[in-house]
Image 1 (cartoon, rainbow, N blue to C red):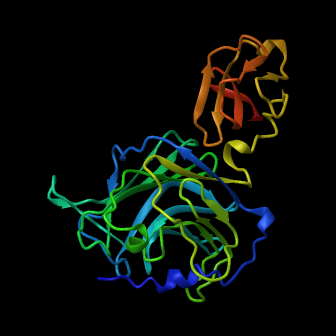
Image 2: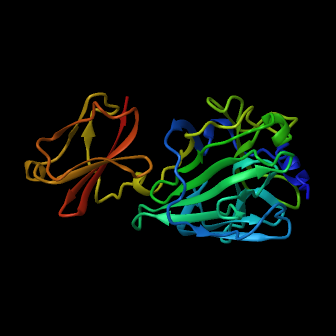
Image 3: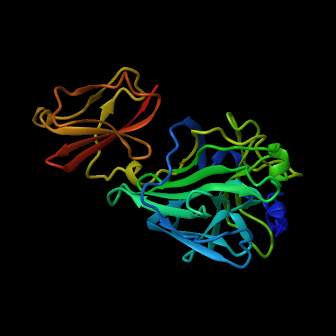
Length: 332
């Protein structure tokens, strides 16, 4: 059954715009990685799906996730008139959110190996404080594909420690033009906050436009037609939305500040610590909380960072597994 996508089409005309362009709640990075299917997922759909107007599927995140700087959510869902997008609701402030990694007229596809339909699934990995929620759309097809063989793969990742949201794109096979399969020219990709389903308005809208290899983050998008990418993101593409209102590991407790210099740095950073801490261990993590470098013992107060890619990092000084200091630096 052909879906009625009038609601999202109207929503993405951007009838309400209250967020200033110079204070975007997220920045965008386009990265490359190796796409992998989830290892031990929990299956949500056990059969074919097409129109989510009647069905409602819920994905428990497994932790409280901070979105758009202040609101907290603990589950995502598909359905209730919002097909092909993940919706979330904060009961405390009554705010609806929309997480749209690849909005289009998508349908489930048949797996000839298992003689069943590819499912939608999720899993949460990592230790408390550093968990990652991963939701997967595996081998999904298109309503408009008469051949029935076109497919795409993508995932949504939410990072507990930092509030980072990532869209991961996997292998795709498109027998028709992307414009034909997606109706609007390409997938609609982005984040929406303050969604009002009755009034067809929103408070904050961040959507990607143009070349999927180098998209532009628009807020607010221009008046007129819905904003979309001109093609399908390539296998291994990652869109990373990093909050500009920092949370988690970015919020360094007042009792654990770790001074370091220079900031920003190019080749090394020097820790402002006493000689009694030189024998302690340390970690360097990136903005997502991923450990990039770890040593059981400092050899000096200066740490070589010349091999790190440009970005934001944290130095965590540890003593027997207990964190005794956290410092932040930018690598140029």
